[in-house]
Amino acid sequence: MIDSHKITAKPDFLLEKSPFGVCLLGKDFKITHVNEKWIAITSKDKKDLIGKGLADIFPQIKKNLSHFLDELKNTNRHYHIHEFPVTIETEGNLTGRFYNFLYCPVFDSEGELDYFCSLAVEIPNAVALKDQLEKSEERLRLATESNNISTWDLNLKNFQIYHSESLAHIFGYDSTHSITQLEMKNHIIDEDQHLLDEALADALATGKYSFEGRIKDKNDKIKFISSRGKIFYDEQNVPDRMLGVLQDISERKNLEKEIEEREVRYKFLADAMPQFIWIGDSDGNLNYWNQAVFDFSGKTLEDFTTGDGWLQIVHPDDREKNIEMWLNSIKTKTIFSLEHRFQNKNGDFKWMLSRAVPDFDDEGNVKHWVGTSTDIDEIKKQEHQKNDFIKMANHELKTPITTIKGYVQLLKKMRGNSDDQFLNNSLNTIENQVNKLNGLIGDLLDISRMEDGNLPLTRRPFSLIKLVTETIEDIKASEESQEIKFVLNSDSDIEVNADKERITQVINNLLTNAIKYSPNTNNVVVEISTKNNQAIVSVEDFGIGMDNEELSRIFQRFYRVSGEDEETFPGFGIGLFIVKDILDRHKGKIWVESEKQKGSKFYFSLPLNKKNK
Ligand code: ADP
Image (cartoon, rainbow, N blue to C red):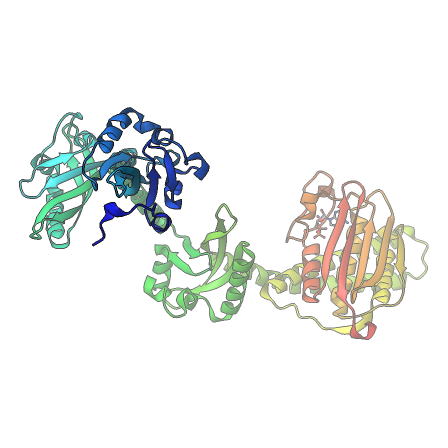
């Protein structure tokens, strides 16, 4: 064994390699050597340490230093280690490290005190730990109090309970009151006592306690409480304590109850309605139908949520269009609207008008779709009856009109070159009016045919310029339009493949409207051109014009601009509706530019006949 008091050389090697902070001090207690670890602990530069006294480095030890040094110097035990704790609070952070500095005197071979050696030993600091504990306790207290959570600690051996002050409040007592476990149990209302028994039994089985129920507090106020806890066991694995939290959740429960009641009310309201109501998720999958749907169809919720789902009640002929339009609405996030037939529980189909609107969240995403289906079967039936009536009336009216027309033409021929101006005018007027009557009856028939979906097109190629010219000539032939000046601009002949009679109807309608709605001017400009494989015809007048609101509705059925002026113009408001339908079915388009009191310019386009392309 090495006799350590014989070592005279300063152990530089040991000093540097030591995993501890090591510092050597002279007899005067001034620092002579420090290793890297010691420097790091003090967070100082080496030059600020060498030659300095201990008190310069640790001002906090100044007070007790002289006593300590005396003790150290005068010790007669060579290996005695003196403990002198210094806490270093790195950058005010109490979670920093704490050190004890151990000192021992080193003697030379003559037994004379040579120097001192100091070792820095890291220790957990009790003060700091206590502080940390207090801080986390404070944090826990704040967290529980700000969430209205009370804490409790139940001794499972003697059933004594300690609780936070706020717990007494929940039970209606003031904060100084200490509430016993039995008292707490007695506050739970009779109906919910069994929930407590179940919760306790569960806790003993699983170690976890969870109770939710009602209490009647000291002031007889009913409150909802939630209590949760955890069992802790002793060394023999016997339940020792249960720690937990308790919360007054009346507000939440009342809110839940209110929401539930509201839901019941809305469901009742929805079920009481004869109209069908249905709801779909953002992808368009339906997940709710009101009672009316089930009563009508005889189906159940299960029928609708399996297989073809609700589509099974849609008429097979309407399904394809239904799916196509529904998918389109989902994709474009736009309103869905469709007339289709639903099968009732007796197997009969009824016409319905279904509409669904998207409900958006703040980001513009669809949350869900709310839809309704309204029974329009009666209206549809009446429409059929009306259409049948119109067809019949048309047939019945056509015969006398054709007769009148024939006789007028006969009379005109017979009249020869008579100078009787009155006769001439009368015959022309009769002819014009009969033609108008014929046109109106034709329009009404077209509408009813369109609604029945049978207004067939007979396509053949023809020259558009020729057709426009002829139509203009025909209109000019009628006496009222003789004054109208038509200007026809066109670059070259344009051929389309279309139903000539229907396109004549379109041109005729636009031209007569241009004349009709320009009471004070007699100028109509017609232009024919081509663009992107389309023939484009425009009819411009300088008449009464329309504002934007009117423009948006003129293609609707039976729409007529309502104004003092317009009432003086005869018409049904179906001309443009028919025009649009004819063009739609030719894959053409119609659009209009107009300004009130300045005039209107109607355009329509038709695909060019392939020969032109
Ligand atoms: P109507 O039989 O009433 O003329 P239309 O369907 O042809 O029915 O036209 C619908 C409405 O559009 C008309 O009532 C009229 O108010 C308006 N309108 C149509 N063409 C013109 C035009 N050239 N200038 C001004 N208003 C027009």
